[in-house]
Structures are given as structure tokens and as C-alpha cells.
Figure (cartoon, rainbow, N blue to C red):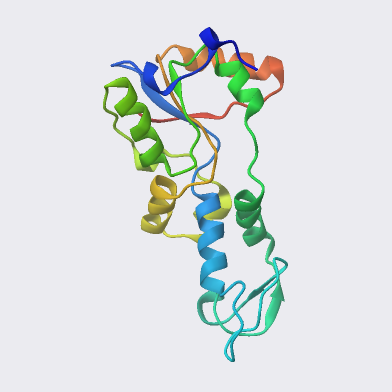
Length: 188
């Protein structure tokens, strides 16, 4: 457990902080979209029921067709949905360095909005600066990728509000602790 006086809260962001995120965004939402678009769990004359280990490949890579073993890149996105990676080590490292923090369960815009409302501040997000997994970048065009990263949830990456000088110290502490803190500046 975390001492009450050491807990990162939504309400402690400050004017002048920069916004960073740990980990990539949009993968879980992309996995969910791909499962939904594939007809996962449906049974009718046009589609057979899909198991988590199969998808249909047809026109455009999804849709009707013969079952095919799950393509590894697609499996990675679905795994981010079904088995999110807890960022405990990053949280412990950042606890003394960040002003405010929340997990991305409802989407970056919604969850960062919770921080802003609770703290009485605003934020600007640079959608092009958001950390993107290679699979998401390869599989989705710019507009779809942005929508997934900004509004998709269940990534459980953490948007962090912190002073600009903290990034270097947190990255160095991360290296020493051998716990990767991928802090990508996403806005202010």
C-alpha cells in the first residue's frame, strides 16, 4: 500500500506541468475493434463462431472467409486488451516525481479530463506525439490510429502531470531500477 501523503492524486496537476504517458496508447481499443469487426462470438449462416485463437480473413483482411490462425501482430493487440500490463514499477518510481496521475481505462481524453477537472487546470495533447506501438502504426491509418489513441480505453498506461525537469531524473531512476518508464511527452 501507498502512504496517504505519498499517493498520486488526480487533483494535484499544476499550471505549467507537462503531460507524459507511460507505455503506448490505442492497442487495447484496436484489439477490441478487430474482434468486433471479425464477428467474434457470432453464429449465423454467414460467419462461424470464432475462438480467441482464430480470426477470419476475407476482403480487407477481416470479415467472412476461412478461419486462419491468429496473425501474430493481431494477437499482440488482442493481448493488450485481454491482459493489460500493470505498471507498478513505473508507479513506484514516479510516485515522488509526478504531481498527478491516473490510468487510461476510459481513453486518454476522458481520463486526462478527470485530472484537469479535479485540478482546475486545462491540457493540450499533441496527438502526433503519442507513443505508438509498431503494430498499431502498421495496421491503422493516421486518423484511425489517433481516434484509438485518444478515445480508446483499457491500455492502463498512465498520463502523468509533472514539472519539465522531472523527466530526466525519472528516466535515470528507471534505468537504475531496471523498470522501464517510457515517459513520452504528450502535451502540456
